[in-house]
Length: 323
Figure 1 (cartoon, rainbow, N blue to C red):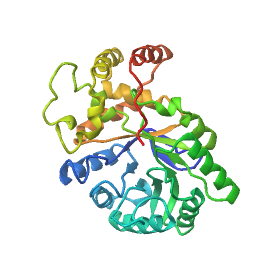
Figure 2: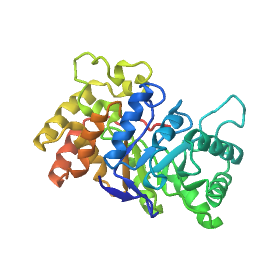
Figure 3: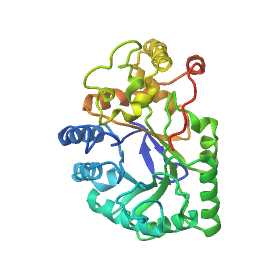
């Protein structure tokens, strides 16, 4: 495994991280989830990501990592989405941040959260209120660092300006969706803004919900047992199951084969070509998938390969940002 600094901070995270969206605590068995986390840790993954909105995932992740030295891994979680029907049980107000931090600490079974992330931007709460609350939690030692997820370049710039003006601890990360097909962070200046403000990118869905594994073929039925065949998890992946996207994966697979790699390894290496990317979060239902994906950190892409890839990807129409 290789490690990169998370933005300008001194925190180092594995280039491949393990996430729990749509899997741990819901779509796969607890036993399978634990097996994947143990394998990830054994192979050098030190970044583990979850959220208070992923049903049961915090409990599974926290208890699975409990036997390991707390200093040996980086535990990240998030808040924003509703946790109840009340008007204050959502968003990024001081009240919700403080209450949900305490709730996540209990579910994770830990004394502190390494990286606490604002899962979305809250247009109904002043940004300075959110940043002050996060800064207070850092001062109390309940969280060590703060980050955001799916914030626009303008929102990141605003938060950075406020943090500097109020002398608050800066945000260190942004977690956007990013893969060969969904590239709005390139077009909309998010990458440039994160580089300018010193935020590291922790990208999710780097394999486009599994489409960039090559398991879904154009003109063929969806394979049984896959994410797309599971009604619990196929809400997002269905947007990728377009003929132009699937035809594109066939061409990308040919490049991967020439490199002696799988399509998933190639897709992850393509993500990691960006210096601002600190970690790419994968999901997994089987330990073998983790072993395969981790080989991506050794795959080097030449300018010619990147150029050939861009030519193939130019045929794909833009996906709308996930907001």
